[in-house]
Image (tube, rainbow, N blue to C red; front, side, top):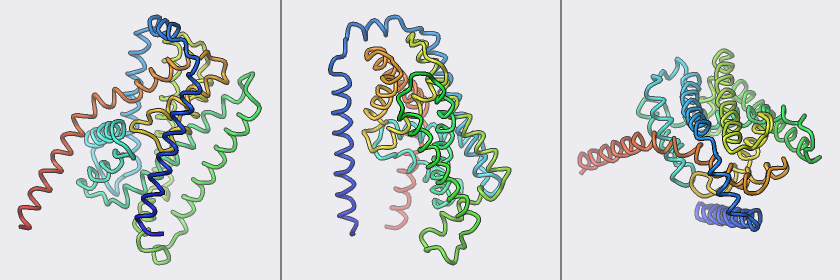
Amino acid sequence: MNEVTKGRLAFWFRLVCIVSTVVALWWMLRELDFAKLGDTFERADVWLLALAVALNLAAQLVRAVSWTAMLGPRHPVGFGPLLRYELAAQAASSISPARAGELLRLWMLKREDVPATVTTALIVLKKAIGALCIAVIALSALFLPGLPGWVPAFVVGITALMAVQLVLLVWAAYRAKPEKVPKFLRGVVDGMYFLRDRRSFSLSTFVIFLGEALDALAAFVVMHALHIELSLLAAALVVFFIDFSNALPAAPGHLGTFEVGALYSLGFLGVGQDAAFAFALVFHAQQALPQIVVGLPFQLHFLSTKKKQAQVIGQESS
């Protein structure tokens, strides 16, 4: 299959996912009571919403720490630059399609002499560990009463799948021999070096787990700001379904898929449509807006620097 065909298939798959998301949102919100929605917003606790924003910023600090742990002494990068890179990457992903933030991260870390193959490997590993962490957190919610019968089986199944995926990655890090790996994958396999360091692996996993736990706590705080009286365990389950929904191709900033995951999970938890939609909108804003406001200046600075570098290289080669 050539690149043109792959590109077309990717485009149509993405388009089908976006259209399906729009249809799902319409179906879920077709009987939305806007008066009740407005009342939910009016009764929101502003101080709790401010706490949720603070938790978002704390999560970004934690995610920068996780990059420090993963890069380790092999590719030492200061915490300050990593925090700016994290904020810039998150801002780019929030306003651009196709996870542009990760492409920006590749370039930013390359400026720190971190090979693109290493950054690519660490991005994959971080996402795999993060997915397993939120799945493990969601397992604690299976003791909630009144859950549909399929929910426990689904959560356990996804958790097992994520665990197997991580085990395979660890196995590859220990067992894969560079000379037997296709040339284009050798750098990526080499980038899994931190999995072979038990201390770095354990520390990174703990920090990534903490970041996911902060997201669940933020969801809990937003719920109570909107007077949705669910437990922290229920909030963790909602975040799990949002993350699962966000795995599908979507508009920039997960617009649509985020709301579908929140609405669907809150629906089977017994939350009314107006309150569920209010939560979806506010929690999405809590996840995206602070990152855009704080990270966009860094993103613009890095893009400007990249443009100037490209101009200098062009002048030198002409």
